[in-house]
Each structure stands twice: as structure tokens, then as C-alpha cells.
Image (cartoon, rainbow, N blue to C red; front, side, top):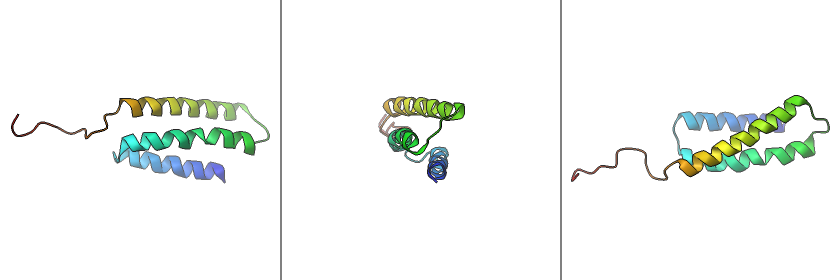
Length: 86
């Protein structure tokens, strides 16, 4: 069940990402959403395989990418900011 919920969350995030809907907020929410799955995995799983470790490594990389994107995405609009007086 947790894997299904995580998958639905990631699918929803991808839809919002491609719709260009409030990406900075999406990055900010994605950091703890992804990070919380690591301790849940440790508690729920009793046996760990190579795929499990690769999955967690990818999640750590995703967290780092989300932090980078959040810090390097302007908080204002990305459109043309020139006024008629310019």
C-alpha cells in the first residue's frame, strides 16, 4: 500500500510539473515527501535487496536535485517583466 500511495504522489507531481503549475512550491513539497519515504521503508521492509538500495539512492539524488531546483528557481514570475515605460 505505501508503494502505491508513493506512486500516485509522484504521478500527480509529474502532471503538475508538466503543467508548469507552481513549480517552486512543487519542489519544496517534494523534498519532505521523498525524504519521509526512507524511514518508512526502513520500518516496513524486513528484507532488503539490491533494487531497494538503488531505489533509495535515486530518492536521495532526487532530494538533492529538488533542493537545487528550489534554491535556483526565481520566486517571481518567469515571464517578461519589462513595463511599457521601458
